[in-house]
Image (cartoon, rainbow, N blue to C red; front, top):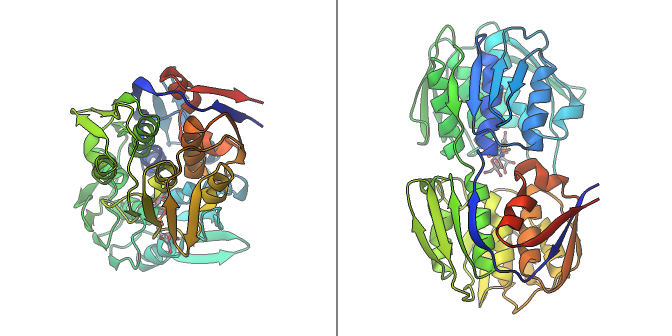
Length: 418
Ligand code: UD1
């Protein structure tokens, strides 16, 4: 199993290119189940989660052709299985995103329940309730969701909790339903908007994506389309923080500064200098020490939970005390005990981490527990004194394309060891 060995202390400087957004590419790939003519997708990140999603769809009969730049041609004209088996679903919760498209186009889906994960319970009750309200007959037995429907029927749905994949699943299901579906309290994440843009290119009639009310007029048929996936805002934020923590100056390219206002505001508050263009952001720390900031995670456009671990690492070495409240997932502080082993001064009180910045962290052997927690540990390691060996980096490979190579180009001393 690969590990990352990082020797801290190098200032990061230079330019880094951001990959396509994992959380946009995943639902977009499942949406190819909705039509039987070819699709062409670009700016898809080369990640383990993307490969897993393609494997899941291949098991259903979808074919993929991938070129050297990881542009993907998908064809769903020969789908002959509606099954998402436990073996794949257990490795990636986003597999639940096949449920809506399968049910909408084929009237049948057999999808393993994802179960819990390291960061919390993460139920899918709202996905199921929404599809039931659209007329699907759903049974949950022996760990599987078995769903059947003739043609789904439009409905008005107000979701109890803002759920990203829940909104995406129901939006995809509604594209082929009879009548006009209205989703209220919908997630406003940019990845939901990108999916809606893609579905509209396929012939869907969706309005309001990016607001809390999405209106979907069902159509009889959808068609293959071309689409370029939006840049990854979480990867963008992670490199900006890496630069800031090491006191360096980094230009992050091929990104969209408009997608991370809440993160940029916090970085400004922390004392960084930020300039931005249409598709780039430059951060300059001029060797200064960061100031601690308070954070409260919440659905978009507020501060993203997927940046919480990185901010915890940042506050660990900043001047002052930062309070970080996690409101989305109940168990998303697994990185805290690892950061404490590196000398961080963090106290946990319920869903809040109180972080008193220390002058320096010390390298130590640590264990990655989930995707974003791993990123937090990498950031801490970049500024720690001595060596940090991060175990279980398969978590990192699920969501960050070539992170070791990108950081090393910026001047970090980082290498992958077996
Ligand atoms: C997505 C993102 C993930 C991000 C999260 C929150 C993808 C592939 N993943 O995950 O990176 O951290 O949004 O921004 O896009 N909930 C229920 N019932 C449901 C569905 C959700 O109670 O049926 C709860 C969850 O337990 C959680 C909250 O709602 O507490 C938000 O979760 P949700 O937005 O659904 O997260 P994901 O879509 O799984």
